[in-house]
Image (cartoon, rainbow, N blue to C red; front, side, top):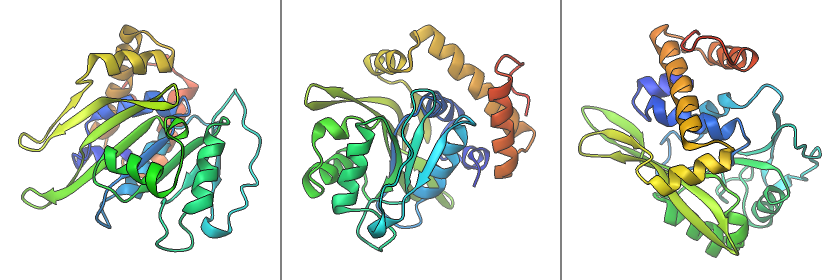
Length: 254
């Protein structure tokens, strides 16, 4: 599914997608989490990676046989390690020493995009720290942990329940909330915590006011794609690349 299809399904709001976009275009690292299978983790992660700038370098890992023969990272563009899942369920997934090495590499300038089986942010951090023995200072180099919910509301629904924003805090982790979902109303709230909003803006190199403008611009662009029924993944990717080529053109043009 493309990001526009995910938005049309209500899995997240256009504002949340625009907020992710601000981070991913700056090389944000991300783990999408959900416990049940077929919950949409990989689909959501893949769709969000459409927001990477055209010069982004991607490296697909291969599981237990991975050698990490990576290109050198560059300050001019992000180099993403794409790990389809951090678990020991099948050999193409990543666990134990390879998972620890991935976090070592992230601390040396690489970006990480992966999925995990868990229900919430605390559970993801617990697995990384207790099961994989990854130092909290390395876990803090993640930018986002985003759990997903699968349930029923006149049919199966998938919803991103929250977006946690991680930052180093000495040898520990600071975790704020950038977005939340209310199950009763089925509504999303962007930036429920002022401190997290300020911290995210500073991480992105923007003022809160500048970030608000940029998020609004990208949200309008995404709504334009939805209105024009631009849903094919290749068409969405082409539209995003055009956005990067002409950043000052009127928003909402697919």
